[in-house]
Image (cartoon, rainbow, N blue to C red; front, side):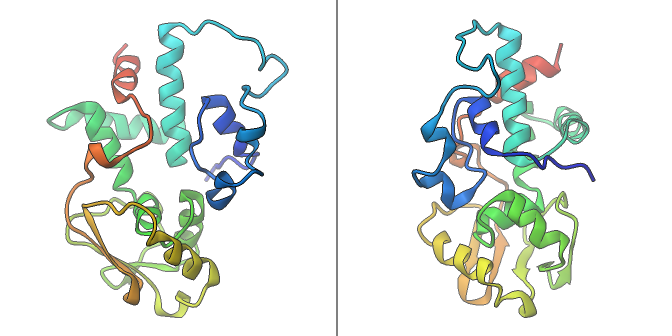
Length: 208
């Protein structure tokens, strides 16, 4: 499966805000966004007027970069969100937050979503006691996500879980740190997603 393998800090500079793709590094002076906030490229320092279409496109690209998905995947998620009842934009974010890699990240088993995908693909994560190695798996209410017993000594998992205590906990999931597990208690809540995403612009773009 195709994945972005280039420097991820360029993504933050391109979107004009930190989207925390490198975990601890994003909170230090080494963060490239702190040193240079201009968009990447030789014309990055030029201030260009952004059209309505440009703003809508940037919101879509921002969401794709935050959740680490490709264009084809994004289109599938949007098509599913548009079929469901309710606000299409909020439903889209709910589907993305319900991905297994995003859930593993939110529970604190990994420092970033890309790290969560690696844990999943290497077989370290279980759902209801069964190993699942598909990062896009949609978790459901009542599912128990846990780290396999043989994987609980991985230092990166231990460190991430220790730091998760200081991270804002999502109300729709319950973390059991002692047992390296978490339970999904409900659907993701839009007001708890703090990243500045204007999903209405994405809906306007995809509705053209």
